[in-house]
Amino acid sequence: MADLTPTAAMAGNARRGLALHEDGYSGDGLKPETVRRANIIAERQELTEDHVREMRAWFARHESDKRPGWDDPPTPGYTAWLLWSGDEGQAWSERKVAEMDRESERSDGMDASNIERRDWQFDADDCLAVETRGDGRQVVTGYAVKYNTLSVDLGGFRETILPGAFDKVLNRQRGKQDVVALFNHDANQLLGRTSSGTLELASDDKGLRYTVALPNTELGRMIAEHVARRDLVGSSFAFTVDQRGESWAPGDDGKPRRSIREVTGLYDVSVVTHPAYPSSTTSVARRSLEQWLASQVEEQPAPSAEVLADSQLAMTAFLRLRAAKLRSHTRGLSR
Image 1 (cartoon, rainbow, N blue to C red):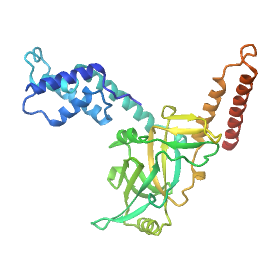
Image 2 (image 1 turned 90 degrees about the horizontal axis):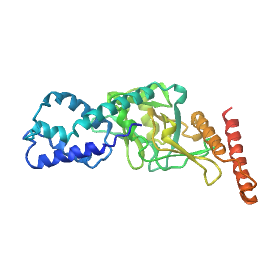
Image 3 (image 1 turned 45 degrees about the horizontal axis):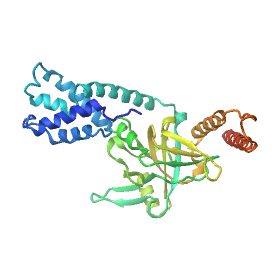
Image 4 (image 1 turned 30 degrees about the horizontal axis):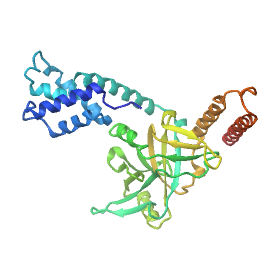
């Protein structure tokens, strides 16, 4: 993922712009939002993708304002240019937007075989709920996933999705890639979608929350009835993740642990009849697990009897044997 942290040069430009603004050089037309964002750049806080795209567009619109001598004395245009992070910010935003577009194209074109699904069943406080809005519409709300929740055995490994894992993908996909709400992941049983405003997604401190306005159809009325009766209590979601967004580590119970810190794509959220982990699709994760297990063996240097004590040799042999058994077990499950 593109690193959207402003450079030191950009921060310096923003600080000079803020100083000029304080001295009254920004004129009367400056928006308070420009000052707020200049402070973010000056503090080198990571920017959102929307902010970076807006930066590039702003610089393109105001390129014609640049002229010799506009900095002596400072004009409102020069002050605004600095507040937006100056020449360095212009070049940086062009480069970062190009990177984001390449990442988006790679995510959009990702083969369907790389899409994973996870099913979740929550406790009574967080399971699905149906509400009737003031206009008579019925909506279903719930979590597609909860953060920091250790999964059951997914076929040789366990998994945790970390807080913020969906932040960047939600920001990147806003207004570009459609996410749909389905029943049992069936595209023929559509409940809502983000592009029409009938599906809303938000990441909070608990997890990825969704709200879908049910259609006034037999399917929508059936979903509302079953959720109200607690016949339907679980959710699922379809996503992709690459190796930069995950990490593996040994688990206390002997099973490897996968931590997902950033997903690359989100495709649907679904109300599901059987929210059970065994029905989750994990073939992609198992391929990643095999690579990690292989790396654990490869990274162990061949021990030398001359330099290692017998106890160290025994420990190295034990670790290699354990990794090999885990890898063999995982391959057997994937067949």
